[in-house]
Image (cartoon, rainbow, N blue to C red; front, side, top):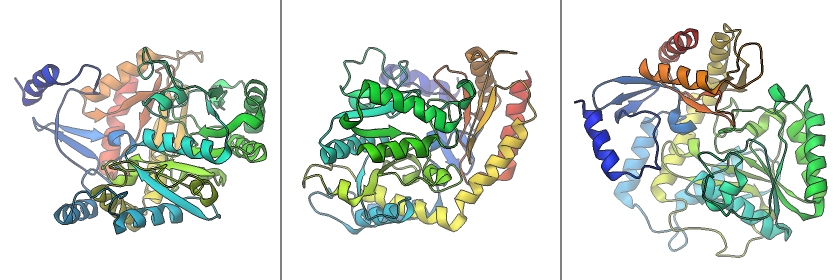
Length: 420
């Protein structure tokens, strides 16, 4: 029996069945673009812990910063006895995010927590209740964020009732929109919002600039600016959920920059912390400061160890120009995937690329082939993830520090899996 098999037996006896895993191998070490399990097997990493390890799994600056902080102190709670690193992370968020206006920021633990707090801020500042989200969206697994998320299985099934005053509008999905361009798709969504919700009731419009779990859907050009302009006219807060797209993942520091958006609020997490749990909300000072003292926070929000990691990760992104690295990865991935004429679509930006698989000669989703290709990749030592409302999207999220050699080795495995 392998060590992983033994660990898996222990897991089955100890870990709740509702916590799933993509593979049943147990990782002992990781770095750059590879993972090594307890049996010595190497995996090429096209997952990055779901877009978290942008700077790698053990970036030297992050390791050094975490070690130094642990030696000083691990926790005081910023709401009780504050510390400089929390302030420094907020300063970095203010500097890095798009928006020419005065900003403020607050720190939390996870992406879902950031989204919940962004909604709280929008409702408090506007005095309104309705929140508009979009088809295929994913915003988290807590009660409110399950309501915001579109997909039932596995995220929402039998977990209701969910939070009220959440309304869903059609997303721009170029492959499945029948030729609608961005402004046309925006008019369709706005018509639904105005008829079903009413502009004067909308506290916030919440959207991922590129959808994550929903299938790496890149809206048609012009869709996002039109939705943002409508929100501004309606007096609603435009919130960009940049949890998966942020911190150089799409070839810019934030995906909103691809269409020159200046969201009122931006939620961040994942790649922000170099692998440690930290999240943030950053945006217009008038909105962020509208909430009364004590209305935002949490015991562990902006933990000092996580703050140290975030500052070191941001420094690494700057030093290595990881936005440019993501652009290079995009070129390599899209060039390799263009060899296949039987794919429904190759899409995405930067190191956030996906293929949608459809049945030959149709646009009908092919979830079975998608699962088979992903399984073949796993068996050959390439860690991939599936996603999409229809379960027919393979997504690729390599660390931005992956070597050219590992990137091409992974692509060789993927090509073989697609051909077979």
